[in-house]
Image 1: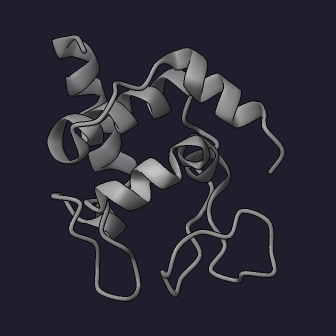
Image 2: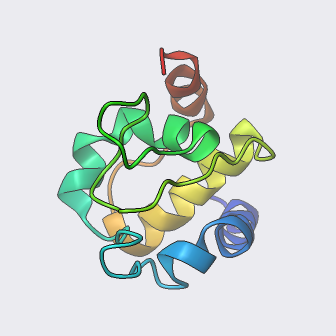
Length: 114
């Protein structure tokens, strides 16, 4: 990952995600989950871009049901595909240490049925 992509991902994360998930991805108790759970992230990798773009419902009967947070995650429709990719790679670099996200993976995830 390039230095500029990392900086952009950090900026986008701090601008759109950190207010709920914390500057260090620690979350806020039962309200907003931590983003440091590598197993959960790997299990739901194909959903991550869609959750960021379209939000997550705390209600299991609704589309885009996510994890145990007790508050809905709002959609982030202002973010471009590249922004989402940069955010996920920023988080990956800091917490998950998994395979790098590619823009093609993000675009595929966004095209899948909600």
